[in-house]
Image 1: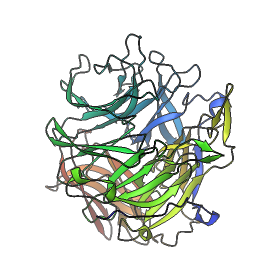
Image 2 (image 1 turned 90 degrees about the vertical axis):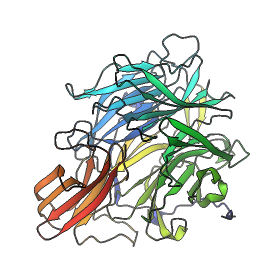
Image 3 (image 1 turned 45 degrees about the vertical axis):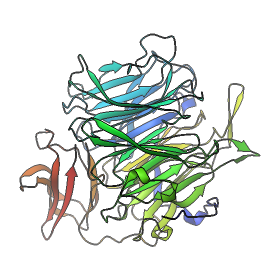
Image 4 (image 1 turned 90 degrees about the horizontal axis):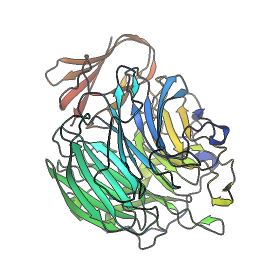
Length: 557
């Protein structure tokens, strides 16, 4: 594939590009108002989940160090329409409390007991005892909460100071056991040194006396190359790839699972020779046009360094074409879409407006915005196949704030960092939940916006829903949970259920009358008795008095 040559133009968003069908529904208290939820700027967020089975969305956030408070982990849940509540907090007073201390979180079920766990990866500090940077908190069905103290801890065999990069949980090698993938960086933050990739699993399913098996480990001799992790099968050979993403120089390192407990390095490449072209913040592998071929979408951060009040480099948005051999992937596969002054932090897929068209939601950073790229065409790499809108923007603050005696650059903004979409309050309207990594004490850190049917949206491509619809689940294949939407043009009797390939009923969501409109469902891969079902093919059927719709899903453990 021939490399595309483009002229980089900064994206300029005008008023007509703002989608007014999204409104701010909830935000937490400002940090400076004593809210301290989180205690410092959020670093990591995962969701949505449904830990207690009440059809209300849960999510987990980790925060960085701030003032006298160390970093911590926070469990939020939607409790009613347009309302979110903080339910559980754990603050790390026993780990490093140095500035620029961070933690990253993931959710999994390593011991296979059907009780989900929070896995937290946090910084350690030299010369201090009991520096267990990996801490695990298990969900208790007795208290219907996460346990107040760690269920298990591990130092991961590391005896020096290190910075938490990223943590990711999934069954990567297909052995029906979830692996933990972590990236760590030799510290302290900003130091020149190596990074490390580790892949391990709990091999005895026992947190009372845990035994950890390290399946793969590799030292990465480049600056800050454990900044993010993405997993997927871009070359679609049946083996999952692991993308380790560098911060400086926009560096990508790719590994691939080659069988049970087996992994191999594939390739790595630099996109830039400049440290200011700060690297890839987020990737997502998905089949955006449902043609059976995966695409990869990537966003970069740019730099927060100012030159005369202007950020030196923007963040970039790319669509990356696939290959039949991921070892051959290079920057030649990157198709430039747009650039954004202020940089980008995360990209996810969703359909918050419920029109059946897939959306790519992108977290702007110093530009205080969330961008919506909706796929309406056929070509995933053609920019005319998408419409772009802003679904959130906050430009009410100045660009600077003072912490102590130091004036910080661009820290007073709502710096959108992490986001996810789904109907977390189960009211039939799609939501986007996002965090702000701002150090501004007068700003909240967690926000929820919601798409409201009937409000103005200037996108002429919105599908008018006039018939029963059952939309494809996402992700698919999935593990451990997936979500989907269905639409009822009128109120009436429905059956919504999951069946196995033999036609046996697995799980009944609804059997009775239901109101018209959009409805959002999450399935956690369990049967009616809340037992985990085996991996394989399942079918979701929406049956009404006059019609029937069926959707195929794949649970891959």
